[in-house]
Image 1 (cartoon, chains in turn brown, yellow):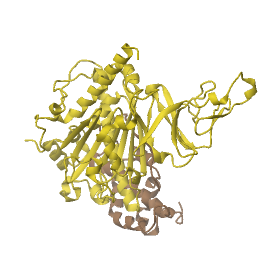
Image 2: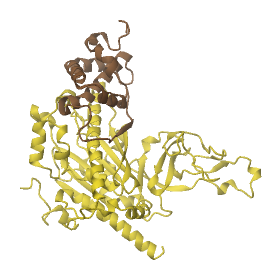
Image 3: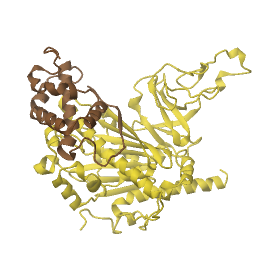
Image 4: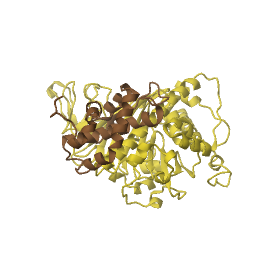
Length: 113
Length: 423
């Protein structure tokens, strides 16, 4: 990736190393990612993004939901991923929901952006 | 010492006259009973298949697979804005009319007419047959005799119901009764941000109904979802509902709520404080203009109030949350030991990215809990089928489980009597 091809707004360059892994537009992608990314990487992502949460939220809140530039949308998707990894990091110590075996629950319709 | 007063009879179970003896789950493991349920329940009761917002304009349609009744229906908004339902079958040679790529998968879209993929017969949105390929080759065929077969379809509070009986025994409103119909004063129409989940669950449909109509399980099964302090306090307290209500085949459990923002730091997950949200919904609730009394919710007048879960017979649940959002569950049987579970969350559409993130946490939390519930059911189904144990004790917080199984048995018995007299 060259310097000009960043995904996030310039103010959030410290989160850029996580962008390729966690700027995912849909819940199925984020859920799947949680199952394959090692715990220590999820912890590092969680620590970095929660530390910048208020600033990231304030940045996104400058835009209307139906009119967000691509980099702000990516930042919002990063916050969705923060929500996704919070369960393993804060509670379970594993990517899979405890005691769920082969059960699945597919999200087929979700609101944007 | 009960936290909430019980009815004068001493328990909810006795109050509703449901008997207090251990119950059998044979109705959830018997293929024969399931075969009876298909006709006695699912071809006689009104079934919710969706909401009017899924048909936003003229020609909008969706299909619903009803394996339990060995059929498929198509729901469509006509050129006259009427919502109609038809059996999803071409009058010519019985091909499924509306499907995309996979005949057994549900589909939706917008169309000016329906065209059969097989021989090109066409139907208007009101079901009338409008075109027959090489019509002159047929014998005395009048297109007017070959419209789509209609399904009884009625709408209540924006919820679209079908009834597969030739002549339903009750109108939809009569079927829903006073307790449920009051809920039409709740502003469903304002909550149009929709999240739709689906899973196949290897358990009888009534077992999953049971899982979500008692909260006795919540402090135990879901203990790992919460910080240790919360889990310990929840298990210590146990669960008590302030009110249960039953009206005909339908039932409601109401719960008290919490103000999470007032809890000690150690009782919450950090993400809840960060995003001001959680399983119970966003902490900053949107304005909804309605009167709890008029809508018949929060009957015990709890403040804070948690939720009311309306268990609408046979397989439909509307759960309204104190934090001003709601969700629905549907349990569509596919066999005596399997069903398709659908969960749909509805929020007032997020106005800001911050609100959208709060919805994300509520939705992700819903899924984490639901996965634990679904997986546990498979463990229950397999061991019930071992028939090692025949009777199971239910406590007073499981009163609604007792009611569902009783009503299912009553509908089956009534159907058998009707069959016997040849009606």
